[in-house]
Length: 261
Image 1: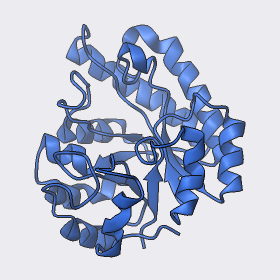
Image 2: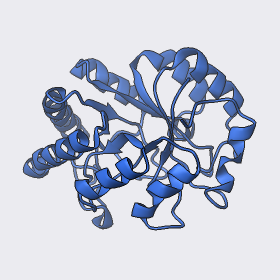
Image 3: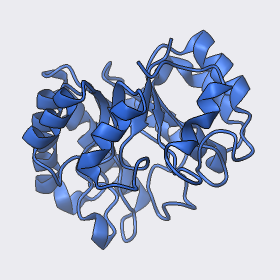
Image 4: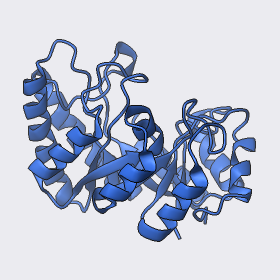
């Protein structure tokens, strides 16, 4: 059965980040993921994981200066040194936290030619994945919709598949978020079926509101059936609860999906 990993960056936001590990355990989760652990020392996070017997299955690489509009460093040709430093930081966190899957955000293309951004992204992903391979880490790329993240480079599934095919490294895979794919293309279930062989991590949220399953138009019973049948890895709950975090798990009572334990 698939493991359910609650995303500590989007769920349990009623409390500060470092208190969300206990919340996850109190709600019977054994697996967590997050977007950016870097504002906190790796030792602090390791302590929380051990204290509450949690496993961190995924986090992102450092995105640059989020408050100033950065959404990743991998397409900007002027930020190579910063990107390489982010690779070192990522490896340090991932190895201590025993996280095996890392999402590399592409970045914003304002002022950058698309061809140059594409070539830079290929070079950066190849470099990072080569470094990650020495530590048993898998690098993930993820299409993110242009409505939530304007000018984001990797905003199309076909582009992501082309990049995977071009790089052709065994530890570079697709992160498939049903919410983003539904917003970009529609037909998120059909596209999942077509590309399951290159998908290493799934995230879920309903569309259009990005809340928990059952709050939007996506037919999750069909999706969960397909995940049970054809997908063997983790499912990240990267949604924004419609009301409270605890109430947002009500769908787990009537939709047969993965295992919190």
